[in-house]
Image (cartoon, rainbow, N blue to C red; front, side, top):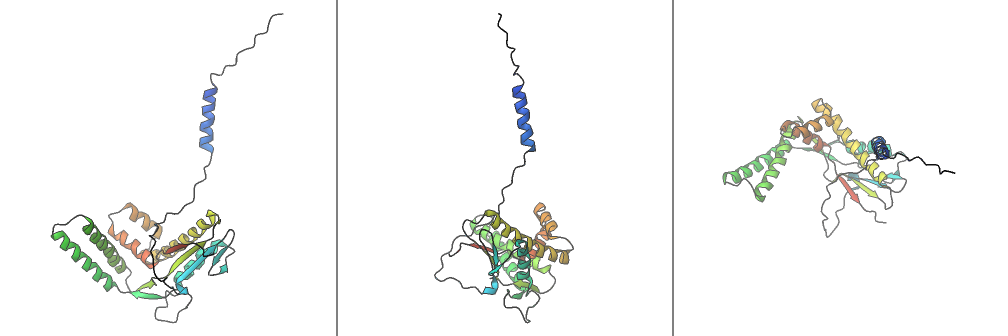
Length: 251
């Protein structure tokens, strides 16, 4: 009996099919994005005696694996954290020189004349350096940086058009997250802080400039040379500064 011939399988197109399948999965697969927050980490400073801050200036947010606490109070709904941060910033804002709530930061008025004096002094020092022929180097860079900040402060504060309510320089949000707490919990706290600050600045921006904070920020980023936009953004961030401190739990 003759042997039956087995037909050969044509595998010439298998490589093409595998390549097409690979492209299909690459196009249709959704990749999870990492959640992260960029922060400028300050250098560690050694102090002989810890600075004692008044409780009203510290908004302490704690978190463990499944709970959030603000000033010792449990927040079952973490979406309400931003509301409390807004309250922290705004509670005494319109009470300068009046009866205030001692549980929240005090406000005072910033004098534009002081900002003008600092601006003129920094400009005079920088001009002296330029007249001496120094237009580069470490000393020039330092004075130029001081002048740039003083310029933004002076012309930014002038835009307010009246006494400038300024929150205490010690007021800040402090984050204390225990070990083994999911990063998503930490990210949620950061998101709530950013939401609160954006809301505060956005409301003030629409009130002062009839334009949202997000729009102004994007324009200022795109038009680096536009000083007026830079002054406006500076003012909004001066009125509602972002001060965040992250600490390790003591226990």
